[in-house]
Length: 131
Image (tube, rainbow, N blue to C red):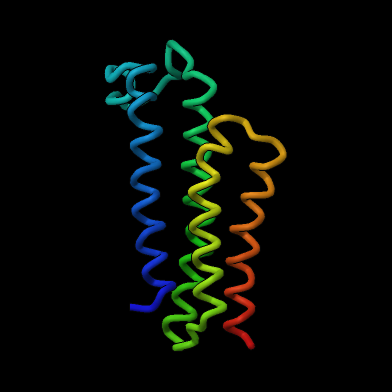
């Protein structure tokens, strides 16, 4: 397995961890009666600010994971894995790990810089595949 595929696997596992980090407090705050319902109406109570942020960080990772997956697959299928693309993959994963507390605790503007580091790493992987 290439380093990029290893990081992709770890990033998918991170998404599962993020789900738990969000789902547990959301269930406690909204109650299982609401979270197991068809959710045809808005909840009768609000989530805490931190839980809502964890939910947005979870969603954001899904969005970024799609582009990162494309980059990894292009590199893997074209057999273009290099030390540079592997380093970029690790930068992506480290940025995604750091993004969770950055979003949850409202680290501004650090959260945006952390997000950009992961996005830039993914972009560089895509560009490396074209070179």
